[in-house]
Image (cartoon, rainbow over all chains, first blue to last red; front, side):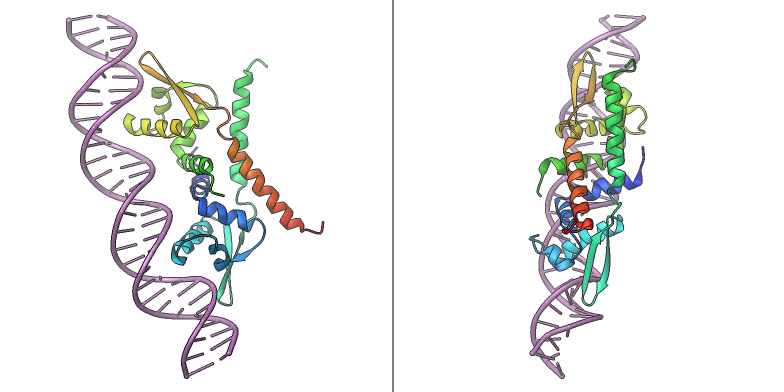
Length: 100
Length: 100
DNA sequence: TGAATGGTTAGCCATGCAGCTAACTAACAT
DNA sequence: ATGTTAGTTAGCTGCATGGCTAACCATTCA
């Protein structure tokens, strides 16, 4: 299964910084500065993560005055759930065996 | 959340070759050669993926004669499901709002 | 015993990724 | 008008990753 969106999703979530951003945004939108605060990292490095996530369709952003507000793209994680569920089913079908 | 096992899982699944291996193994064990067949890639390159997955605890392997048999590590994907579920819940709690 | 099969090891190379600093722009505050 | 805040752009660096070939076991088959 050469699924480009899964490639992107998994790659994006492989970085703990980016997962932390998602975990934060699940509770509501936030500006870049606020998101960056807990991460001991220069702003440009951090911004790179934001860009990756926006490019991957996982978050969306908007400029508001001099801040950039970020929020979750609500359905972004659905392909992941789908793939996992699919795997789970294939696995169960196999462990139960074709005769059951 | 600096979760090492999630790091490894996501990173491992980010590669389409490795996802294909999982998809194949969900239907039952297989030897390296058989797993490698659909992937236009030199054996050593392919073996590298097998090693990564074994190191990450996603699959297990055993030597049997001159072949190496691989199979799924049944609970490997559970942390993923857990994280996704957690995210989904945080998201829903937020969209519904604290007052509902 | 000799050839073929399946895997393994070693070593190389190109690319991408995550981080950095320095320098700049755009909005607000005084 | 000047300073401060929040991003942004550009350009560099080091390391990890994914691929390759060549050469080498170890097992099985004839």
